[in-house]
Length: 174
Image (cartoon, rainbow, N blue to C red; front, top):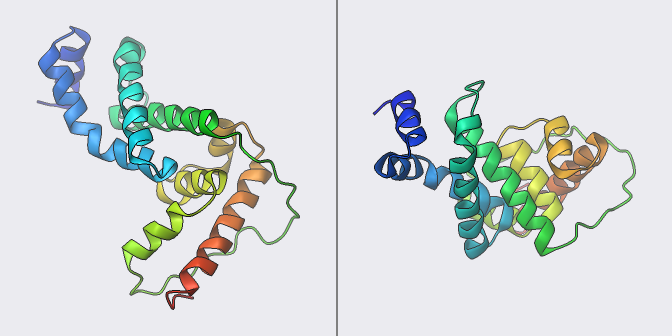
């Protein structure tokens, strides 16, 4: 079934189409939520809440992006809401320094070490890092989603990368 056919069937309240839509996107969306929350149960809750929102808002989908991108936006926003509910974000006054410094990863970096290092980041750093470096959002988009300034987003990304470097250096990665 094409995405357009699936969308039309879901709009007609076809339960099998709704399940097919959920099945098509659940793994990728769970991964996004889990990387941001670093908690399986919270990620599962965020995924369920997000899909409830998806099905309620489906008639408003304007097809300005792909259905998957639209669903991901809902998942990200739902996940961010969970983060805010779980812990008040700490606001840190950060000095302006070179924020665009790139991390140079060794080619042999084990994904498991990287994933553990990302999960160990503080919530705010992890959310910014995942949204920008993994999901490809811009600082402006992340700032709007998190209710912070673009400068804060850049600073948090810088410090997230700095912590990742420090964390990965213990495994011999520079």
